[in-house]
Image (cartoon, rainbow, N blue to C red; front, side, top):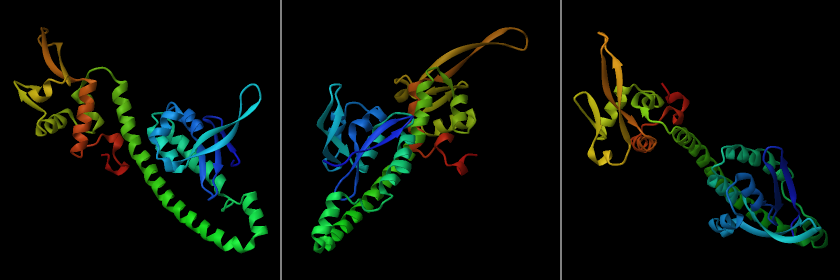
Length: 272
């Protein structure tokens, strides 16, 4: 049984951690699932690579005293997979807590020297060279793992703007005018309509925009008749096309495929 170290955070709760014989940190899967709100640990476990997992005995409080039970722990690779699965808004903050506080605290002593390793070095000093070779191999594997984790961190950062813009779309269930949507892309309604026309989405007839039939059947838009007062005081009306929530998601995906991003997803220097 590896020694448990508990890291606590007032906002997120606590994570139990252990260090394996090669000095690699592992995190209690149940604690990770609780913090990230990603469901049953047993179900999450089935989605993770078996190489990311180890079992470790842990004392838990049952209300009738402590009981020793086996629990699943995941390495850094598995941890980042869990973070990518989470829809929790502050998943990024949790990742930062792990990478900025927990991991540096675990690694601050360099090689993790357990009592067993120390006693072995004292009793059989001739094995020190062998141990250092094994440590070197483990360190090289750790460097590869760190690179993989950097890639996963980048994936999290890349997914963040998309998730945020999707959230904005899903939060707004009302019909939106093309003017409002065009504003998200830093364009005028006229520019935006032309883009959609060039992409074969819509056509103009008698001064009104209509979707081509292959798109019109999906409920992407609705038309509304808006009354207005003319300069001579008489009442008239105009028909306008509005985009539904489903239509906005369609536009987002179509435009992104064609290299057109909403301002929220652009790099700072790209936004006009």
